[in-house]
Length: 206
Length: 206
DNA sequence: TCATTTTATGAATATATATTCATAAAATGG
DNA sequence: CCATTTTATGAATATATATTCATAAAATGA
Image 1 (tube, each protein chain N blue to C red):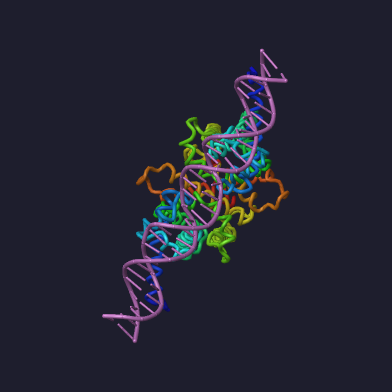
Image 2 (cartoon, rainbow over the protein chains, first blue to last red):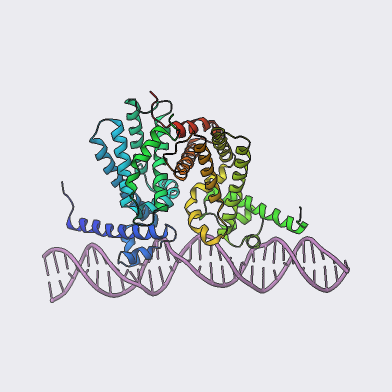
């Protein structure tokens, strides 16, 4: 059902241009240091034009984050649905995630540096449940599946475990991001490591 | 060797007053939203006075974070030194850390929300190695001890494991911080959980 | 081609707040 | 008690930048 008029489609394209510019500028300078003027220039528009497409700076920023996370969720969901056993699901989840961040390094910079902003301001500006929440819910679902299939402990709640899961992945990505000089080793190569640590811990198996 | 003149000591006291005020205001509003005026008022000084004690807003902020982390490091070092076996060391480390964050909830708010700032701007303003680095080094040392004593795997590097360790603790603290309504259950109660997950993973032990 | 609507422009505005500095108050010490 | 030094004050300054808006350009369609 394609109901976009040409006008609407054009508008979407221009919004998209601006979002791409914002992505570059925000990730280069961070939220506060990036100016609307920077972003407009990068998108080859005048300052005021940006405001015809995004109400204000906050909203521009959030639109960008939302768009990206939606992408990630979509990719992850599609791929994990293709298998049934929880172990594969989890492994695929990790791999997809690493892949995404590797291909979206700029975005990752934003995501990391402004996480807190996203958590506090979001409530005031968005009525709809945040995509981060959706994302979180999906990891909880994964863990529950693992518990149901008996490969993950049920000594602890799925939410609690999901948080740990997420933070381990993020910490590895962050570490890689920080230390890898440009075109270094593949982030995706760390999938195994994450899965192992997450499932088996760091204790020495005697 | 007490070499502080009364003048110097007074100055320290006033700096301390200002730091306490900054702690309250920063944690209430975050770095950008907190104004120097807010902080001055909270400390019962005029705006300009703050500048007699701290060169600028950034430095005030970093002084605060440094001071707190130094505290944490000191506490952690002292306590872990009292035992020899790595398992106890690690358990104590976790417990002390939780204890610290529980007692310094305000500070934790700052620490979390401005982590990125701290990581980027620091280099430019401080020549001395940051306390965060010291902190990180200490966790690496802990892991190495564990590896040397054969309770932690040496399939992976100590740095890599230390990052994971740190991030697991932080994620638990963050979670608690977010969900616990005021005077709820003790954060310190989660020590066991962290140790278990970290060492044994979330895999179901058959 | 021209009248009307839509879109773009960027200088001007509005606001916010970090920082300074001339002035005043307080402390010092002789 | 006075002269000098130190410390505190807070109004004024400087700067930065998000946002607006009068104006211009472009697109539309008859």
